[in-house]
Length: 391
Image 1 (cartoon, rainbow, N blue to C red):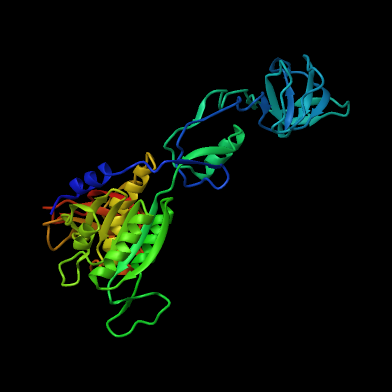
Image 2 (image 1 turned 180 degrees about the horizontal axis):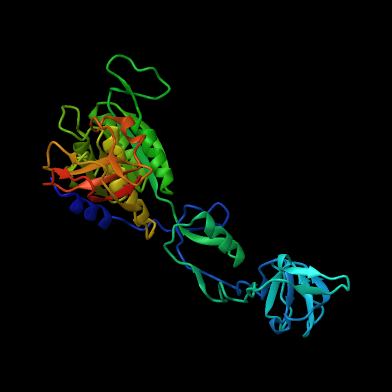
């Protein structure tokens, strides 16, 4: 049995590059950039007004202004603006050369003479200067970035309509056990519906990888071997749930070795998730995850998710919050590192959820995150600051 930190490093050091592909910028959210995106122009590309109002020279504010023209967005000024003159201007429109301020419509009065007067006591420039956001040649998005919806407008603005991204890892999911039936089936006596596979598929999709479910391997070594071999041939990562403990039918580790997988570890000093297995095949990385759904969920979050991002060369880090415990928490045993699902209250306090063990699947529903308690520590005191890893 190894410490989680050692298991984590073993998994991360086994990652391999999945390659790249070129895709459209539309629909690229959740993908990972495989190269920098460079601006082909200044942003804004000209001095532009940030308000609806009147554009002029600031030193003329004490007098009334002759209105020369109306400048709409998308149209360049056609008349010069000299001292004692201004032009009506719309938000986003180009500022005439030499003008250094725009006063808002709300701070103006159009006189019977047709001139306009500044009625405010102070006015900002209200001009966005050419290139103040981005200059030609600037890197606007860096390699390794996990693309977010707000990045799409940046790509559109600099004309990046196609981009190179890391290929999404292919992840196959195999469930094991005669006790399992699919969710659309009615379980018989001593049977349960297969929840792990579908939970894992959603977790896979959420990380930006491609998940494929290959079905349930019954408690037969040859049948399990055949399904595992198929999964390895189709995948970059294989997730097998169940069959990794110490029971008579828990022969997944033996099947993996038979399939050419070199086992790196088969037990982690962590709770839940002790029987997690990991191995390396020339064609794929293989996990044997515990059959209990909370264990499978958490070990995916802790080991598989960061591996997927690493394989896409993504600079991903889990989102964590430092918050105080609402009450003292005491656990029964401290021989392993503990992962404890917690809720965050409206006042920013942390409380463990009601949790009956790694088979308590509904315990994760109210959970906002997990805290990690190191081996050897029984208590977390009221008011103690803990790191909440959001899930």
